[in-house]
Structure formats: C-alpha cells, structure tokens
Length: 293
Image (cartoon, rainbow, N blue to C red):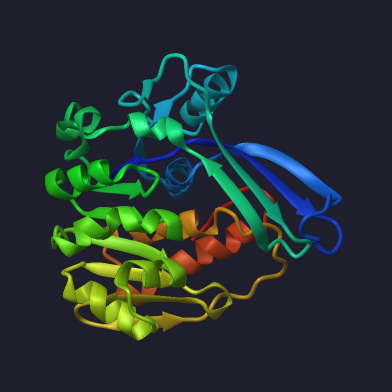
C-alpha cells in the first residue's frame, strides 16, 4: 500500500499543567518538545501501520529542520519529493493542556507551508497520482487544496485540521470536486463548513455535495462515519488515562485511510480510527510509537 501525505511538519511544544489551569497566569507545567504537524503525524502513523509512505512538505533551512528531516527518514518516509525553502524558519505548534491532558489553548505558525503552491504540486502530480491514496491537511493553502481536488486521480483524504482553516476547503465542496474526496472533521469544523447545526444535518449536507465518505470525531462522544450506503456511530474505546489529546485526530485520519484502502467495512474503519486515537491520547507524544490496530 503506497500513500502520499502532503502537509505540515512542525516543531511541537506542549505544556501540560501540574495543577488546575489558570488562564492569564503562569502555570506550573511539564513542557516537552517533539516533531509534529498534522501531515507529518499522519505520515508517522501510517509508517507504524506498515504503509509505504511518501511525505511531501516544505522544510526550513534551520537546524531544527535538519533534525526533523533526518527523523522522517529514520521513520521510513520517502521525502524525496519534499523541498527546502532558503532563508526560512521552521513551523511551530504551541499547545497548553490542563492537568487532565485536555487542550486549553494552542497556536500554530505554519507560514512556511505557503510555499507549497499549486505550481509546486504540479511538478510532482504524476508521482502523487501513482499512489493508492493521497492524504492532505488544511494547513495547505486554499489554492493548493483546490489543485489537489482537481488533479488527483486517486482517493483524496483531507483532515480539515481546525475551525479557522476549514473555510479553505469550502470552494472544493461547493464546486462539487468531491467524486474522490473523503473528509475527517470534528463537530465544530463540520458546522463551520456545512453551515448547519446538528451532526445528522452535517452528514446529510456533505453527502449531498458528493463527498464519498465523511468522518466526524466528537471527543468523549466517539465518532461517526457515513457514506452513501450507511451511517455508523461508535463510542470511544476504554481509556485508562488521558495524557495528551494533541495528535489524536491525526492518528484517527491515518487509520481511517489505511482501513479504507484495506477494504474494511465502514464500521471497521471507524473502529480502528477510534482505536488509533485512543492509543495516542494515552501517551504524552503526538504519535504513539506502539500504535497497533
């Protein structure tokens, strides 16, 4: 199974408070740094699941990017189609969790990825379309997402990434460039894109736009998967302890794409997505190196 992943590679800084989180104050915390980014995390998870992964991103030319690049290679990713942007600094993601591991605030600086343009993609589209599927995140520009929707000839899975970035995908959906599109969102992202209120209305709207399958994660309430044949609602697996919720959605998307390509049923696809997400939140890192589904 060959999968192309296109998206962000970041330096993650995660702080988890050791006491009750107090906004607008200095909180005692454990602070960790790690490699992250939605695209990179999805690629990492797919490598752990045994897929052949080609990761396309823009690397900076600073010392952090050198280490990040080497780590991608160590994990088994093919990064030969990625490039380095001269005189640039790495992307950063900063997250503050409460002592239960739930995110209270976050900030993302992914301007480097603005250099991943439609022209950049055009130079690589033949290689991209040789994969069994493409995964992308909404850190890409609206124009680049539109290019992928128009020019990929294999299944395209998109992680909507955040409420603020969801609007980038709206032209793709409204123009019905959806015959090969599979979407993963949370409830707020689904509401932002669809403009309707309830989860059932979200699902109906996406399917009416021609989206092939849609997966909506709902935090403690589990997840829903839907296609033109059925809707599946599943609760979360049992969680021993929530340590860090960052990266859970990335693991879910990676596992969903992997399961879909394996030909699993919709129920099985949602189930392994939830298993991957659950295993991720039980570790302080954004990817669980012991991932098993």
